[in-house]
Length: 151
Image (cartoon, rainbow, N blue to C red; front, side):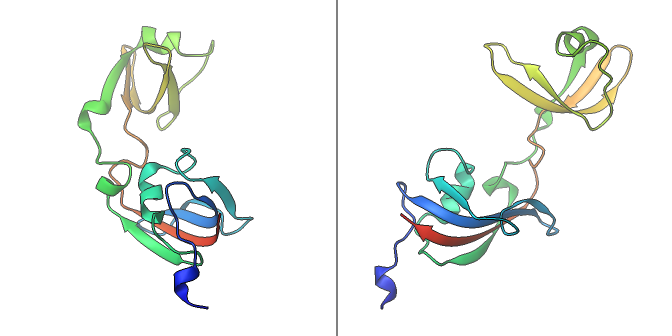
């Protein structure tokens, strides 16, 4: 049987695969290799678009690791996304009596009804400093994939 008959990943593929996203240092962020493989419909947002882009055109049976610089992953860190939030705004977005600790991920209601989250960097009597960058922004990542089946 020649390799030409192997199905490849397209924009319309339904995939069964193992994948692992890891930090540059090799620490797992998410992995399916220790459990059952993931099944997903391409283009439905189950994987980030930059991860799907790595998969396009790969034949069934591929086991490969991609090195993704920040520009090809969650983007560079944006200093404008580090912002002060007043005590009043914090109270509006808190459960009664909620205590915050440095490093907490806090969700805020966005104008227009969405949600966005920031990591608490510092807090004082006037307010708090939050980092609204994606927690993986500015990081190089490893994306390992093993394509088991393509429909």
